[in-house]
Amino acid sequence: MSSKVPSYHELMNPLLRALRSLGGSGTINEIDDKVVELEKFPDEILELPHDPEKSTQTQIEYRLAWARSYLKKYGMLENSSRGVWALTSMAKGKDSVDPKEVVRAVRAMIKSEREEAGVTEIVTEEDVSQEESWKQRLHSLLTQKLTPTAFERLVQRLLRESGFVQVEVTGRTGDGGIDGRGIARVHGLLSFHVLFQCKRYQGSVGPGEIRDFRGAMVGRSDKGLFITTGTFTAAASKEAARDGAPPIDLIDGDTLAEKMKELGLGIRTEKIDIARVDDLWFENI
Image 1 (cartoon, rainbow, N blue to C red):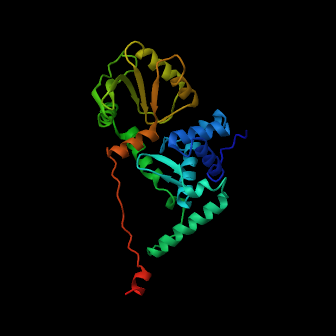
Image 2: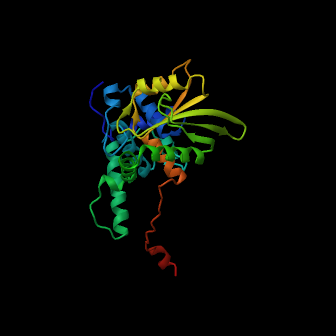
Image 3: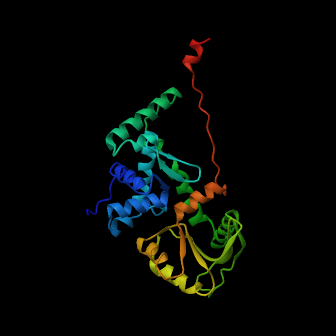
């Protein structure tokens, strides 16, 4: 395997193969993990950050996001408000795509839309997806402007909004890195005591920090939850899911951003109306 990070063009067909392997749909994390599994990327590629000061994503995650955006615009993918991506009927009839044709067609579509709206600027990749801009700004705010205490309060609010009850922030020195606890309710029938740790990282969390957290929670909780503004290394993810050990769920910066957007916590989504003249309507007067 080459140490070169694949371009987003080169990741289009692996992404489609991953979705087919997942049964035609999946969350971003599931899709990314399946691409990595199928393509067998080495750790030195998987752990390369895109831009540590502006984004929580790795290079692979960043380029897979671009691949998703192009394939969606092309008509091969669709995504729901719940963050699930799926193959369209168009994709189910094709084994693969020509990446160059996808890029050409998508840029032509965007150019046409902008001309209809009276916009004449040159089409750039930023016109395909505006995802990164707000996530980069959020990452900067969380890591550089928010205090550690404020970040803990944000996590507390996020857990409450997600259905947790009795959520409290402890953050006591000498508490083994545990920042708080809560009870996760599942459909009002089951409940799990959860200990959580929340860290404002710009880099990656490694397996050692996962082991330390697990050591602190043993005998005190059903599950653990590790939340970071950064990312988790492949080794950290494996450690969190290790057989025979108390389970730890991981929420990285990208997942945190999407959850905050979903819950409307500091993120507003706005729709912009574009007026277009319908020539056919006038012909029928």
